[in-house]
Image (cartoon, rainbow, N blue to C red; front, side):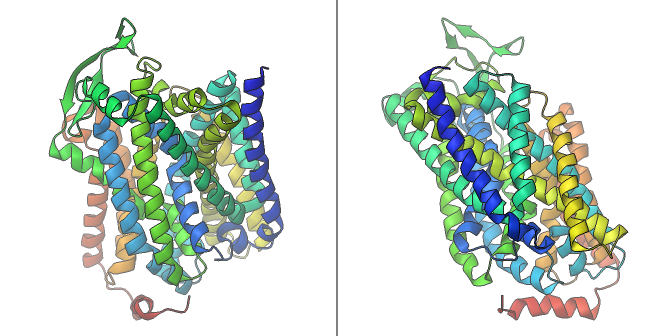
Length: 519
């Protein structure tokens, strides 16, 4: 092993040891109860809440998927996706965070999203709980797989080892410390990882701009690529046998695809996904005081705007610096890794890829923990064995975490998976399944249990069906989140109006949330 490689490994090892130390530190508190293991006893401060919510949301997609899209096809799709996410982040914190913190406390002190929805509608037969838990299991398993793909690509690229071995090593690390430390470990490490991600993005961005000769040089060269800097177009690499054609080591592009208003609205709809993201919503539920939400919101929106902007510009800059380094869509997601290793001395180069590892871990641990809790807490205890004690539920949670991880690793065996596309599907699934019902639960008193069930099923199944029909083109090329979200909203309203009004108990609790300030 050469000295450069050793320094990179050393820097990343320090980071990994820090994450393990966090897990061990919180292990005792996590083992005290499922309340501590799954939601940290509602004790998160505003800084940790904000950074943990955003770090667990963005995942390796932020440092690999989004720069990869910008590198491969230019500004168009990446720009509108980022704008939609910025708007969605702000609105989610503004409209959902405080109300959900208060309502989840009043509604039986709910500690998971299925818990909250079930308690919100006072159901005896836990159909809402089971439906929500099953959708969480399905989509979070896919989400976790995307994280394992990211860490596999990272280790494989850095250390020149087999992708399969790299992916397995990364997955085992994530599973180990989540298994030990639970929600508090996950949230505390997410705070650290959010900081590392922010540092890595800004340092790589600034270094890349200077390395390319300045921002003006980047713009001038990028404009020479047809449609590359046009936010209303998508650049089209000329593909031959799955690989971009080059001439004299210069990549060849065909005429760009012009974006119509429907595509732009469809891409902006990424922002709708935030209303249904369990890994973000559960952080809202876990903050220590609802009055701290406003401060957390400011931290979160600054982090998101800077990070998304940096990720997109890194992709554009990378195409100028290394025009033919990556000739497939999947390979282009390694541009951040290449730039970080090219511009820094090895010890610093080890810190910047640690940002990718941080992003991946901060999401994977959340996905695995929430998916495991949906089966143990909501299905096992909530439906099949209501008398199960806390220790039994903890054991089932950890067993489920291992099983889900194995399934996700099997899905992640395909190293040609494009992280951006895998995440897009799971994001749409959560956004359409939980986003509409979350908003209606918090803001429309007339929402009924039947409407909630029908809306979740309609949203989740529409995402799957629309994705299967996507190759047909036409209207089905629209990002599946948009039609699924709209259909779910319509179904919730129609079914709620067709069924009996909520009970007085439900109405009373709904109205109490408006004035309740004691949490």
